[in-house]
Image 1 (tube, rainbow, N blue to C red):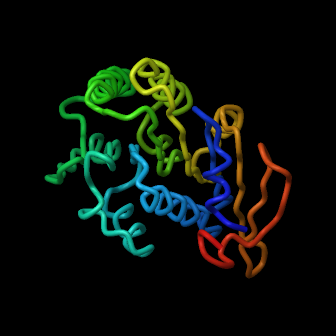
Image 2: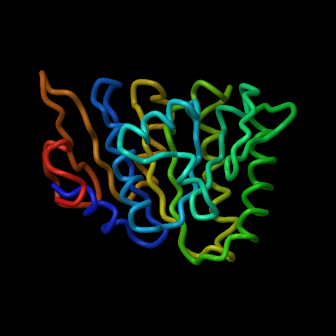
Length: 221
């Protein structure tokens, strides 16, 4: 099944979620392949990164996408993990928050950043790519409430960017606390798991139910 079909199916302001049922499902790889397709199309992308930047960089490069060459006004990374861990990055278009952070301080500073950024972006549509959303359980004391507040910032910039579509990549074993919230807000859900020696993807919301091997063929086959 063409992975690009899922991107085409996301409605205006809609959400596509890839749920990895365990790290050996390689559901995060499906997310990276979808991101690669957005880049190929020249879409504006805002990555919210809850995992180490070097892990994200390595996974992108495994799909043939060099991060440093991709970073631009059209491809911006917000490094949540690095902000909390105090790992500074000297890369253009990779943004972090400085100083003391807890759940509430982060949400306030992040909201301010997003509002300021929206005033500088000259596009009517942007893709929010959250990788991996399950990382919130490693960073926040109250991950469910904080993630909900982070998500609510989207509504605050709708006057400047009327169409914000999202792809969320989430490992259910790492952060079960937010699964119900993610499933509820998603328009389309694809769940990926390892079944014996094969990976299977199940469409469980938004499109006609189907089971397929997400690693057969290419993104555009």
